[in-house]
Image (cartoon, rainbow, N blue to C red; front, side, top):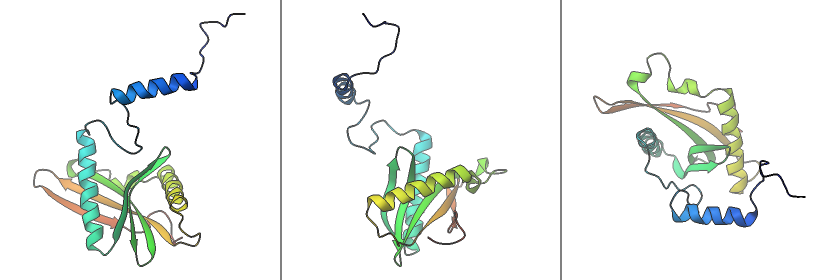
Length: 166
């Protein structure tokens, strides 16, 4: 019996490998995880600028930045740092001041975002083989940029996800 041509079939492993090789040659995808191959958009560049400012800010506050833009399919954490034996994960939100009249950047950290942050942080700790009793917390940094005056205002919200440190 001949299979129906209208039925969708999943590609074989060899077909998938050929497709991946062709896409890598054409620079549509990268073999290296977490590596961007396209030119970043203006929105991405604006966010990267905010992350750079946040990184400089936390470094000036005594934190040692140990990782940036840790990504997994289920989420991303912008900055990972250490201070006094505590691992602190930072979610950075960058906004233009003209867009924050009625909705502040920290309001975007809702219940679902908190759950995603918890999962990605726990994954990071497990992957990097931190001890089970490692103290850690999730902080939020908002960067409000006034493009006309070229000034930024940074707000650091410590332990933004829980009432206590884990």
